[in-house]
Length: 209
Image (cartoon, rainbow, N blue to C red; front, side, top):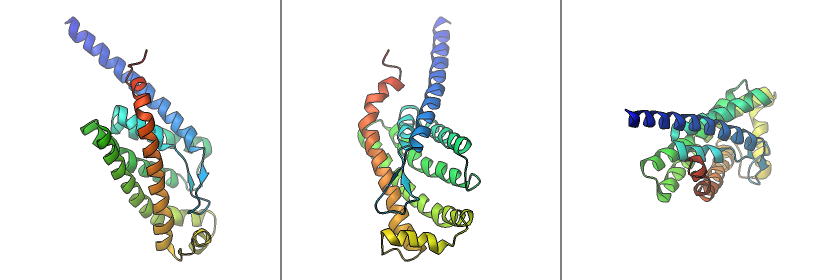
């Protein structure tokens, strides 16, 4: 009986710790989302942030569902604090793209916790992020931004042409700006996660007191 009670208390403490960690990592992800950097090969309205870094770390430490929750907290905080020019559609797209990266990575790592599996999972997630990002931008985000700022789609494409003359239409804009942007973001965040995870993992698993 005592053994069962101890197991229940341990499981309860574990759940409380996970909930707290999800909240903290979501807050860190939100802060990182506000720090953005322009990239040389994409128009100025595409800016890199590292907000998926704590999402991936949490996904590896606590599983894919935790990663999704961290991503959701990040997006909701940003939406309620900064608002949205696309009635929340852009924020939903950000959430979906983030999940495309973290869920495959966390699932691969959960299946077998090794550096190799983590790398495979993040590679799959990065490709999925690039593909989903391309589709979402082409059919949802770019039309929404054009409508919100009262400008034709051609004007957005021309912004891409200024940084890359090979961009001549929507298809080339997606292939030469949006897809490389998301591949670059996925690769950078994945690389940083590989460097940092083993250092923060003991803290997240309660092994440092």
